[in-house]
Length: 340
Ligand code: 13P
Image 1 (cartoon, helix red, strand yellow):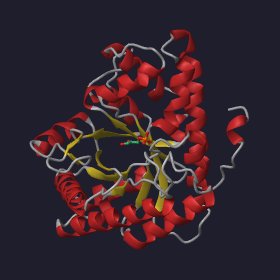
Image 2 (cartoon, rainbow, N blue to C red; image 1 turned 45 degrees about the horizontal axis):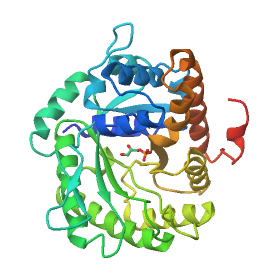
Image 3 (tube, helix red, strand yellow; image 1 turned 90 degrees about the vertical axis):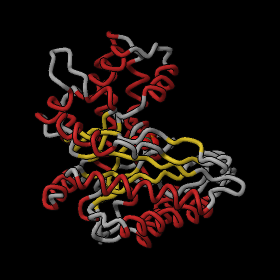
Image 4 (cartoon, rainbow, N blue to C red; image 1 turned 30 degrees about the vertical axis):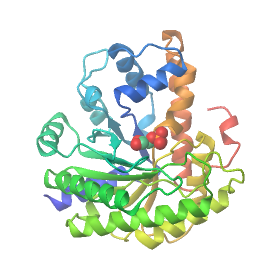
């Protein structure tokens, strides 16, 4: 492990005014996204869509890195340039999703464990050769009656730390992503209680497994009411609760926190990030690593039609810029209505 290389990459991932694009939807997830625009999910359509995102002019002003999927890291632009090299030339760091997905946790109904540790060292070696300098592993914690159990939290935290240690051994910066889902009818205090337990376990396992905190990025959920909660907390309450929870658990040695959007609308996710970034004296950079919040509008504007390629890029640029503004607290609700 080369600590200074890991630190340099981690710092660049959360550089001022920039954040990450999560474009690492698995084959199953991208099919669900394409279904919404009635587009068949073929390898070429997936390649075209990723090309739309990556070749959007001016994007490197707001995007520091892109998380790729195994298929995408091996694909090329229309002109034959491998995507990782294309991004690298723009100063955008290529990253790679390395987990094999959340699978049912045996004998724990309703709970999952993320798989993908077997053979991970060898895969990391190959991904580094293909240009990846950071990786992502997502653990999923659902809130419901009697769940999450402390065992599911522990098992997922342990696997996240195993993954993070393997990444650092191979000089790849791990994005550690324990996602507490916002599906369901739970309140914000319940989300805070669960997120507290999850982050506590994650940092315990990271310490036990000797993970170098200066060379990692945390990708958490925000502390937020469930989507079906009848009384959803206001943006200021989300920002305050999220910061409170992070301050309790995330050591100052961690260079940056890059939130997932998790099913929030793009405007909500952007506003919450902007509000948090108005807080002074935080020990870490607060950034974004959004999938849906950066892509939803672009995907809808494109609709799978060649004639709408530029319209899709315009929407992607707009949401990348608005989140870039949120990095310094400069995004205000309503800005999304103004011209891009
Ligand atoms: P969302 O922002 O759509 O939640 O996706 C981020 C991500 O990478 C989830 O693993």
